[in-house]
Amino acid sequence: METKNETFAEVGHFGGKTQAGKNQLICLLKATYLFDEEGALSLAEQQEPLLLEDVYLGEPGASTLTEAADLSLGRPTTELAIVGSVYPAVGEQGRGLFRFGVGDMGFEIAAFGERCWQTRMGFPVLSEPEPFESVPLLFENAFGGVDTRHADPDKHGYEARNPIGRGYLLAHTKVDFTELAVPQLEDPRKLIKTPFDKPEPMCTAFVPPHWEPRKSKAGTYDAAWEQTRKPLLPDDFDPRFCNAVTDRQCFPDFVNGDETIELQGLQPVSMNGGACRVVLPGLQPRCAVNIDAAPDQAVPLRLEKILIRGESRRLVLLWAGYFEAFESFMEMAGTTWTLSEMSA
Image (cartoon, rainbow, N blue to C red; front, top):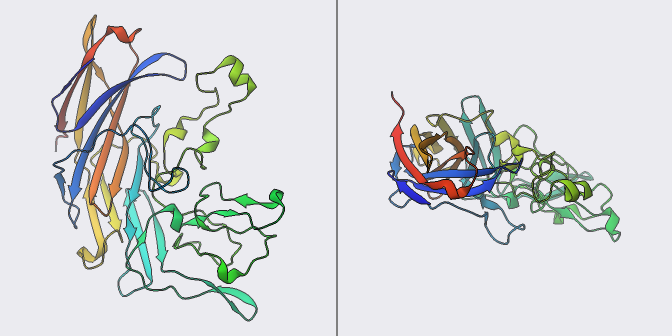
């Protein structure tokens, strides 16, 4: 199949199957921008290529998923991921606050320098945080981890939402609290009070497919599936599995692509007070599929993924469309891609 790309962005098309087993053509367009300390956008000279597999910080499954593959079965809503670091707040050396907001959607993450549990009047209390330059927004720094301290394997456990984090402790475990690693990223509304607290892991990076909340949305792969559905997806597959972020980072629907993203704490306070406002560029990409019997059939494209990289100051946007009005891939001649901006 021929690809005619009349845009600055990276584009591609890929053959696939729907959940019902019908042929479909997946059409992707990826645009990369740079932003300055105030959030003003400029086009990246080098556009990032389409990503066909997940990228981890280190060992897959044992480190943060820093970017989820662009190719998916179809995200049901727009997702927003942020990979970067939290910097100390004004007048602070050991505390910071990251905040992002897009309309009614948003939340905060409190960042702390290294702390430890101390004993005071017989009770465990947290020490004051050490000064820090920045705390990376990685799952390694959020609450989570495993507890395999007990001699009985049946009394081991792990945090299904973040098995690579720090601070996870089961109630029956006997341990010197002062040796327990303390999370550096927390929900400022629900700060950790005791070593046995189990708060929600706070991180804005991507979530691997075998972690919650994605794992429980993947469906049931049992003997019935083997006999009646394989190799298709199970009947109880939830399309939200394809959103590779936490539920709080998923929009209720697909966004237009001209929204304003408010960021605080993703850069030092010496740079615009630590605040940054990124206005999405309002692109309107178009894709047309050329079939022998019916040329120029439009494929509706939706903005599926927004990725902000704080350290490299990059904004990456991914649009996707799914075309099913054909019987065989042999009918396909190619795709044509164009791009315009929204009218003011």
